[in-house]
Image 1 (cartoon, rainbow, N blue to C red):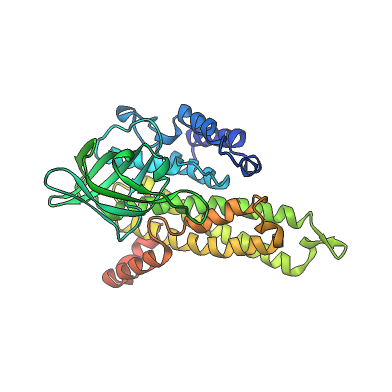
Image 2 (cartoon, one colour):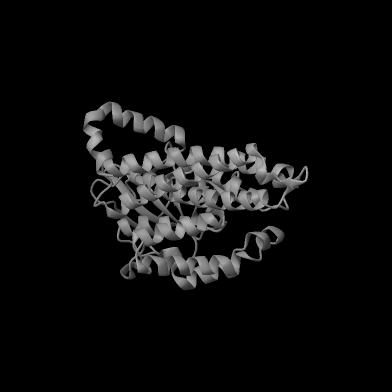
Length: 354
């Protein structure tokens, strides 16, 4: 990480420390913490990190943005920072200026499709769109007769059926019934739905890895404090074994996610190497989320399941993020198809180069 990367991430971490304390948020049942946090993030330019000055953003690099998202995962952030960053990145691909305020992206599910009609309107249905009910605008990747297009629509022009994901964050169904985009542009040559899914998968992988880092920190701290049978539970071999497994899952997730982020940051296009890295990262991080969340709750016992405890803020979000932009099953199938189509001999140079 470069010095500039450190400055951007440190800025995000300071905001998170000041305004996104998990214990404070957990005790706030009114949601009053959201407005000051979002205002601070917006004033720092973090939501539009991946948008250049030309299109209304702060012009941070992909690597800087990825670092911010990993830090956001470490605090279990429950505002649409990642979604707004993704939306800004998508709009930039079509040279569309990003508006102020919270945004999200659609589609976020591999089987959903939004169609661009000949009259320039959008039709379709997107499931599991994160934070759609809280967004002012939605960045869309649509398919039409002449290929992919990128569109900016007002959330108020769409039908939004509100829902909640496993982590109690908004996960909505957005329906488009001849919605007229505010702006519309053709996607770059070769840019397709898989590109958006891969980018979203790497974002979620970094967030999952961040939550696992915090789960490990919390679990180790609790094990060194909790006393049972007149000694700290960290002295029991079974607990030590579980904590070692959690550390291993955390390290594996972080390595996979950061490797995929580096691949995208340094690639000129979404080529086979990026596909391999991003798909593998989502698969491995999703697996780590399942195992890691289970271990953390085993260490904490019944107390970790209570709504008053902060553990679930991390474990449930890690589990929820597995499904966004394609779950591990989807990417395992796609990765298998790639291997079958290309052959191991053709893919080995891509693996060796990493």
